[in-house]
Length: 277
Ligand SMILES: Nc1ncnc2c1ncn2[C@@H]1O[C@H](COP(=O)(O)OP(=O)(O)OP(=O)(O)O)[C@@H](O)[C@H]1O
Ligand SMILES: [Mg+2]
Image (cartoon, rainbow, N blue to C red):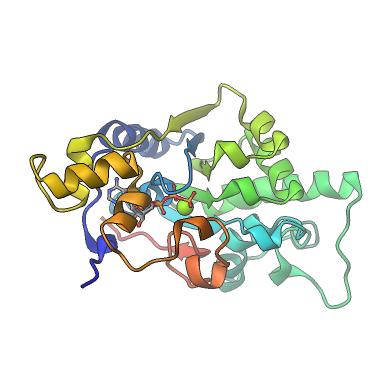
C-alpha cells in the first residue's frame, strides 16, 4: 500500500522555519527582503515553500509563486510570467506602463507586438516590474516565491539581479529556491550579495528521518532506510515505497506533472490570496 507523505506534517527544519518567520515578520514592518533556499534535488526546498505559503497566508500576506521549468529555458521571463501573469490579468489594474510590462507578462501584450531584447527596453521592463510589485504590495505585504530557479532563463535571472540591486520601495519579500549544483553562473553571481539571506538545506538527521517515515528512532527498518537514503527526504520516501517518479528522473519532470499550472499551488503559478487574520 502506498503512503501519502505529502499529507504528513513537515519534520525538522526548525531553524529554517524560524528564518522564514523572521523574514515574514520583517515584511510586516514594511521592509523589503530576499531569501535564497538552496539544496540538492529532493532535499525539501519546495516543501519549505509550502510552509512559507501557509505562514504568509496566516499573516494576511499575499503570496504569489512561480516555477522555472527545464523546457522553458529559452522563454524570456518565464518564471516571472508563471508567478505573475494570471494574477495580474485577473486584477484589472490600471497600468500606465503596461507596454513595458508586456515584455515580461504575456497577458498585457497587444496583438502583433513583438518581444524585445534591446537593453533599454529590458531596463524599462525591469523598472516597470519593480513598480508593479510595489503596487501589488500596496494593500498588504507581498511574498514572491520563485522555485527551481536553476532552470531559469537568462532574462528572468537578470530581473532577479536587478531587483536585488534595487528592491521595490514596498514590503516585497523575494524567496528564491534552486539547486546550487545546477545553478547557472549568472544566478550564482546575482545571489552573491549581502541583501540575500541564505538558507542552505542539509539532509535530515536520523530522528527527523524516522519521523518522516512515521517510525520511531529505534525502528530497524527506518534505520536501514536512513542509512541508504542519507537523510534526503525524497529518497527516504522512495525507499519507503512511495509510488512516485524514479530517482533518476528527478529534475526531468515536465511542469504539467510536477508543477501544474493551477492557481493556488505553491509551485504552480498564480495567486494565494491571504486568509485575513
Ligand atoms: N522536512 C520535510 N518533512 C516532510 N517531508 C519532506 C520534508 N522535506 C521534503 N519532504 C518531502 O520530500 C519530497 C521532496 O521534497 P521537495 O520536493 O520539497 O524537494 P526539492 O528540494 O524541492 O527537490 P527538487 O530540487 O527536485 O525540486 C517531497 O515529497 C516533500 O514533501
Ligand atoms: Mg522542488
